[in-house]
Image (cartoon, rainbow, N blue to C red; front, side):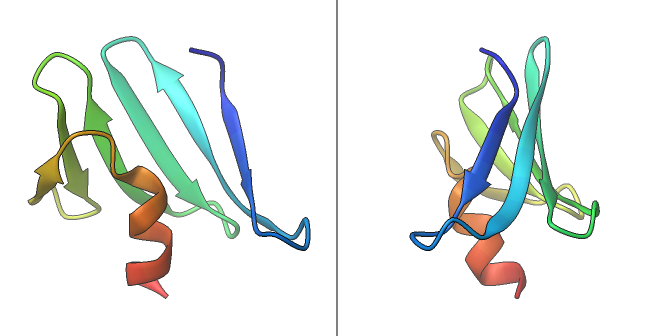
Length: 66
């Protein structure tokens, strides 16, 4: 997977997802880490390393962190 830019419906930049091998790391528009997703365990974690849920849920973290 290539790095992914996340935008809202108006095209405003919300953040980006960096592919780091087995992990995907989500950064908000200010460059802060919001969470990560581990491909091997199919688990999403919040910025404190707590389990957020099973599956790829990174975009949902952008709305919870606000």
